[in-house]
Image 1 (tube, rainbow, N blue to C red):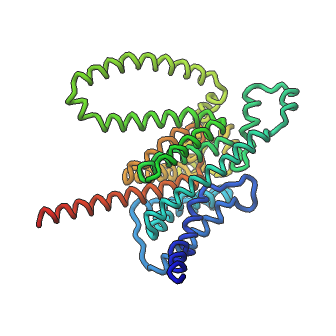
Image 2 (image 1 turned 60 degrees about the vertical axis):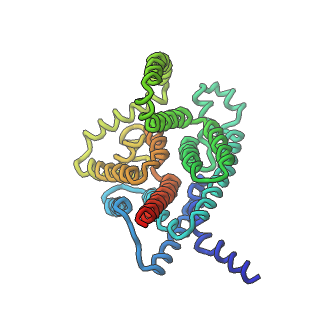
Image 3 (image 1 turned 90 degrees about the vertical axis):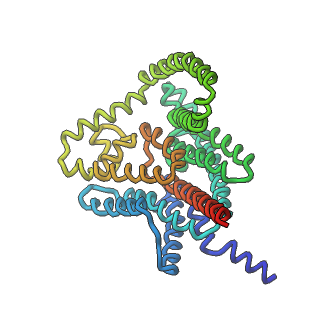
Length: 407
C-alpha cells in the first residue's frame, strides 16, 4: 500500500499536474468570457510552478533565442506608454510568446514518457473541444435560416453566417489556425510514439475539423504546406539515389515536364477565381492601404508601431489588418516586427523540424494572423524538447561507440 501511494505521488505530483494543465489547455479559449478566457488561468498555473522550480533549483539555463523572447517582452512593455494600447491585448501577446521559454523550462523537469502522455491528452482534449465547437457553430448560425432566405443573402453572406459565431474565437478562421497547428503537430509526434495507428485517426479527425471551419485559406494552404514539406523531404532523401540511377532520373524529369503544364493550367484557373474573389481583393487592398498609411506616419510610429487596438488599425488602413506583416507592423513597428521574425528564424535554425508548424502558420498568416496564439508557442516548446532530447541521445550513442572502439 505504501509503495502504491509513493508511486501515485511520484506520477501525479502537484508540479506534474500543473505542467499537464499548462500544456493540455494551451488553446482553451472561450469567446466573450470575462475577465479572461480559461487559457490564462492555466498560464498562471504554469508560470507559478516555473517560479517555484526556479527558486528551488536557483539556476536556469537559457539560450540566445529565449533571451530574444525576453527582449521582445521587454520591448512590448516599454513601448506601451507611447501607444494607445489595450492592456488585455498586450498581456495576451506577452503570455503567448512566453509560453515558449516557460514550456521549455517546465518540460526539462519531467520524463519523456510523461511528455508523451501530456501530448496524448492534449490531442484528445482538443479533438473533443473542437468537435463541440464545430457542432455548435454549424447548428447555431448568427441568424435563423428563415431570416437568411427572406433577406435574400448572397452566397458569401450566407457562408459567413456559419463562420462568425464560434464559441471559442468568434471567427472560425482563428479556430482553423489552431486546428492546423494541431494537425501538423500530430504529424510531428507520429515518429515519436508507439501507437501510430491512433495518430493516423487524429490526423484524419483534425483534417475533417479543418473543413468544418469553412475556412478556405486553412483548407487550401494546409494542403499546400503539406505538399511543400513532403516534396522537400522527398528531394532531400532521394537526391543521392537519383544521381546514381540516371535512367530513373531522366524518366522523372520527363514526367515532371508533362505534369508542370497541367498544374500550371490548374493554378491559372484557381488564380482567376481568387482574383475575382472579394475576400482575396480585400487582402490585397490591405497591403496597398498600409503602404499609403506609412506615408502619413511619423518616424517614431513607423519604428515602434501605433496601437494594438483593432479600431485604430481599421481607421488607419480602412480594413481589418488580416495578414502577418501588416498586423505586426501596426502593433509593434518595424523594430518589433523584425525582432519577432528573427526570433522565429532562430527557433527554426535551432530545431529545423519546427518548419512543420512555421510553414502552415506563415502561409495562412497572409490571409489571417493569430498574433496571440498560445498553442503555437506551446507546440514549439514541445518540439524543442523532443529534438534536443534526440540530439542528446545521438551524442550518447556516438560516445559509447567511440569508447568501444578505444577498448
